[in-house]
Length: 133
Image (cartoon, rainbow, N blue to C red):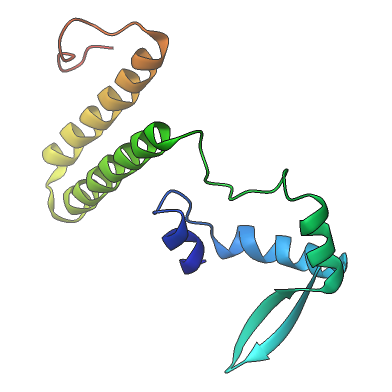
């Protein structure tokens, strides 16, 4: 899972709950085999799995691939912004008083509404006023 996150440039961070069921299904289908190496499960393609990959190579690609560098960079910028926001929210959750937490909740609600306005093409001329939306 770390390898997937690294290869995708942080765009895809799958959880064990999404990876292991798929690996189990592929194992049931005879496409992957599992072995133990230094106390860790290692999955590898079987001959049937390799044949499947070769037969369907044009249909198979990394799930995080997007059409061109522009969209990839856009997604990375948005995800980096979201990670920064998440870190700030975590600090507010830990260190704020009730009034600060309430204001932070308002700001997050405003941000969510603003995101949907962007997609709707219905952005106000300037930043939204507190309580607007």
